[in-house]
Image 1 (cartoon, rainbow, N blue to C red):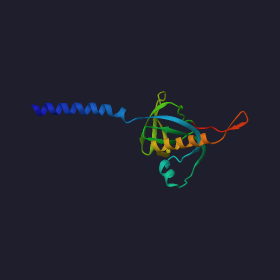
Image 2: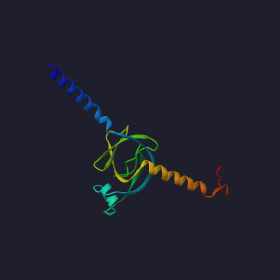
Image 3: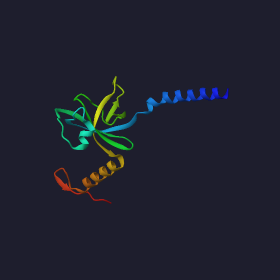
Image 4: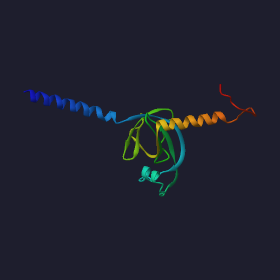
Length: 152
């Protein structure tokens, strides 16, 4: 009898864990940059970009996004010119077969994006800080007058 109760309890907890799992496969990220760039080859995506082998590129321009997650920053490219993601929005995404699959609130289905580049979030933050420091050191022009910023 105890064995039967344990089996029923285990089966019930397994069903609960299985029901929770599909929603937990998504990560959250923020899109901080968008620009139009060359489209990636549809079937070679990430591996072709990382190997340096230049395959046939499509002549069209596709949107390229910088997506910040908690641990990794992704530079992703759409497969067509009409794949747009709103800037500064927190979006749900998942990794699937070397692609980033994005789920937008108003879309009926998920959109796939090729991965052009990945960098750890800590390294990206350091690079951004370095860029901002360099911009602060350079002379800036206000109303035609060249000035420098001093640090206090």
